[in-house]
Figure (cartoon, rainbow, N blue to C red):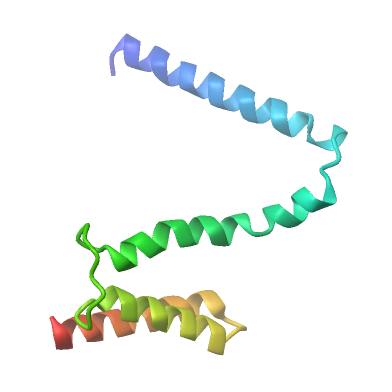
Length: 109
């Protein structure tokens, strides 16, 4: 690593750390409105949906709403696995989604 890269690395560290430290240090001094707290509950599902829907429906950059799109059926199986087996939602979603995806891809691609 050159000297310039090391200076840039420490500069990025300093900026990132200072921004996060200031916000975390001041967090206990402010009370967030209840409406905002309830709204923040929906941020993770919204972000995950915004990432996954284009990946599922546009796997090659164009709309692919056909029976040969294994991504659609893998995603549907992952949702179904998570809904049916609520106790182990994450593992059930991953296993069922991947299993259906690979089987569908093997059979129809």
